Picture (cartoon, rainbow, N blue to C red):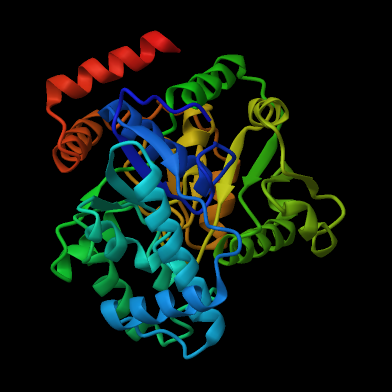
Length: 384
């Protein structure tokens, strides 16, 4: 990736890297785009491969005592933390004019990010994709497994070390506010390139769309996988009461094929072109989840593509206000919505006010004036 040394740098400790793929990666690229618009070059924090063994353990032990981290008593944990500390230090020392750390990896080895950033006088902005303590069946490698209340208490204390926390859902913003963290809220919305592709799908849809239901999601995430399986099994059970074919697509969904009725079409992970074709040929989308936190990025994307979205209340968190989102609880409500003719929903609006507020905060925390940031952004655009 090209780096522009006319601009200060925001280091992004991302779960996914900084290229768009799907699901959580879409949120990642939204944050990267926002930082670049604020006037920063963005560099991904990469972990050192094999730092010296004793140094790894020593740095991990020092971080544990310095941050008072409630870590599992394990040599592997100390090594993981030590690698993270050394990697952050190297990146902060070698990167051109580091001003911000965009902290997405708020679990596992990523918990040391605020400590190291403060040692170098760099502000930390947390962009948790969800509150990790509320994700079932996914224990933190460093902290270990705890009851939800204890895990949430630990996570809140870690997030409080950031200079700013930006949530993807209003529900999590409210919860962190209740714990005394003045969290902000940036709803997910795709970058201009992805938005344009989704609007192109909308333009190809017609009133004679085949009667297909699209179940879109990732099977790699425990709550999403559980929700996908339960939803498809429910739709198969109700199959005689609505006329649609059932199509399933998304990361790792192909591994679920043996669990489904053979009449269910499972497409697996699709690139943009075949996914666009599938969305264009589907009448409605159905989303279901009973556990998990954050917000589902697929809902605004499906709406932009022109599909009405039928979902249960938990899946609809931070999305109930969108035109085209219909909520069901019971089988009867689901069947009624499946059989109802739904007009093409109005596309959701870009969250301009939230974006402008956060652009200003990023510039303030990174020591950029508004005018200077705009000039650097224009300069960078002229070089592309």
